Image 1 (cartoon, rainbow, N blue to C red):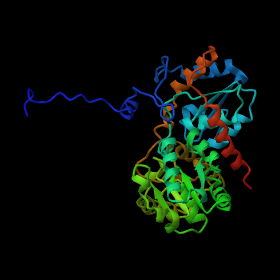
Image 2 (image 1 turned 90 degrees about the horizontal axis):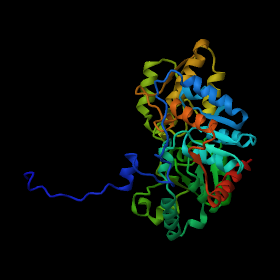
Image 3 (image 1 turned 180 degrees about the horizontal axis):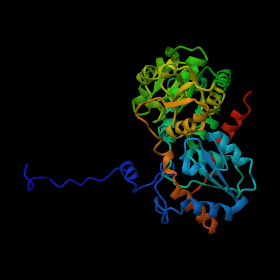
Image 4 (image 1 turned 120 degrees about the vertical axis):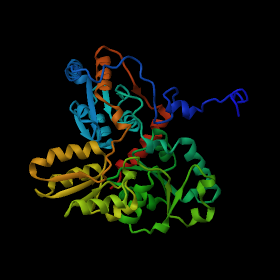
Length: 394
């Protein structure tokens, strides 16, 4: 076809395409794109001094939280470090801090807003710091899933359990339907509680944590688990499959932990004789089954702290943390390597860089509130209910 014959197509980009191009926004999504104002240049040699000056000017009015997966250049300014739930609770324990600057991702900042007072303002230095896993379960998709469960006649038997790595909307859905939130540390306790309330669990949004906890920790079989795919009619499942299942797993995963494979484990054992393989339970089931140790981020850190000098470790979690731990324990002769030969950062977590942090702190110091994360009252009420059920777990 010649150029003259080529039809002129009126093709309009989809909302998702615009979002990915940075020319749109979805307030109900983990993704964000708006960042008003000019950021300092990333090569600015004065950034560290500027961050210190702004933080000193703010004094007790600001409390900076740093997730374990953050860059070192950001972590150095954190008042506390930890996993997402620990940080949200730390924020709630500092009611005198007017501003909570959360160096993490969107769902974490939402959780901090839910748990802190109305007078406290939670700031995310870059609104584009979302979570691909959390984005894999939208409120509309989960509502449709519940309709499918209702039509199959099993909804009354199902208790939702949602991972902390989920949006406020999903936490609210969980609270509204009698469920609870869990972390990677207490997922087994949360599931035990849920099975005391009902016969089945809808586990959102990470299939791997749900499957690993059910099979590895609670003795269920893989046949007890079915995978609900929100992109297929009825989740790709029959009513009979839903009636027979104990665990209905949402088809979601962590983009970092999901990349580790059984080949990664086998390869590192060949490359590093005597190595201990330590992985996060967000990894695939076959990876977890082949590992020597499995646990949350905090578990990984504590395991390495108590490990004998000279021991060798391959860690299956985000690279920023692995590299930080390798440097920390090198003087003790502990050899720590990333599980996969192809190293990978969490791309959205890494959006919080020093220029964004400086911009946020300097804006606050000048009296300008930027990038506030605020959960609406109704969503907050039901999400908090689900979080409180978790806090009440034995």
